[in-house]
Amino acid sequence: MTTFTLRYDEDGLGLEKRIEFDAGNPAQALLIAQGEAAGRWAELSANGKPICRLGRAGAGAGDYWVIA
Image (cartoon, rainbow, N blue to C red; front, side, top):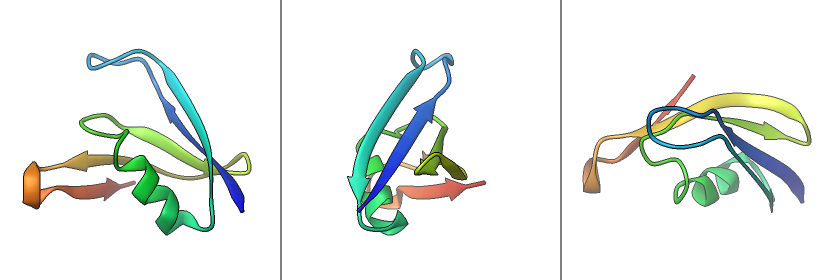
């Protein structure tokens, strides 16, 4: 298992926030992040190494990830 971290900066939608969790791979980490990233951008890292910045766009069935 790998320790992943989602880090949110303070923005107009919420306060600074950091969430750590274990997952087997980045795909599983995105499934976990799905419940957290609505409308906000976050940095996803694995064992302290940045992987990407991500956010969710769209709504309902048209919901999709934006990865930078």
